Length: 206
Image (cartoon, rainbow, N blue to C red; front, side, top):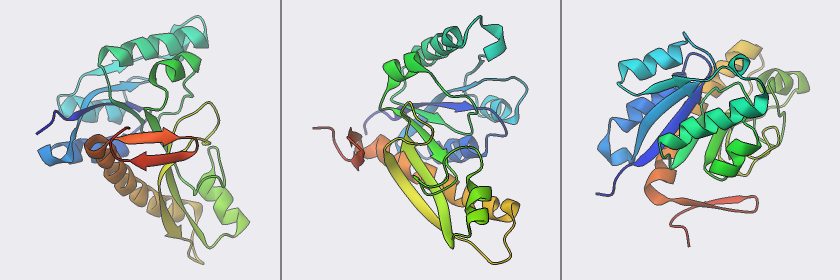
């Protein structure tokens, strides 16, 4: 059996997506292993989840660096030390910068709680509800230098109920988001993947 793909996960909060990945990685057949968890703040549940799983952690706070570029370089250097095949932004609330893109471009994925390219940014579920759409969902994409604009790896649809609130809709989206993330990261690890323009294809890189 080939060695599992090495995954570094970056978090900013409770780490529910991280936990879903950690649970999936308990199965050797999944094909991936979380080798480190990083954060932009200390004392969060995401780091506690990593500690309980015996996964190394690190924290890089923007305010501890003289410039955002220095923070980005330090984050990139630390991530690189773990030699990741894939970097997963799992509720990570900071935009990574040019140095990070240069080092890991095409190997960083993030989730968005809407069906891209609709409703980019922080308020996807609220904007979907306000717009009156009947179907929204979640997207996993390869991070580029835009806001939720990268090539799409996977999407899941979620129907909008007549009595939905932002909270109830977002909870159903998050449930689908976790399942989508676990499924797609596993496939990326086991099958490989390639980014060709705006298309992401699973399978050996040719």
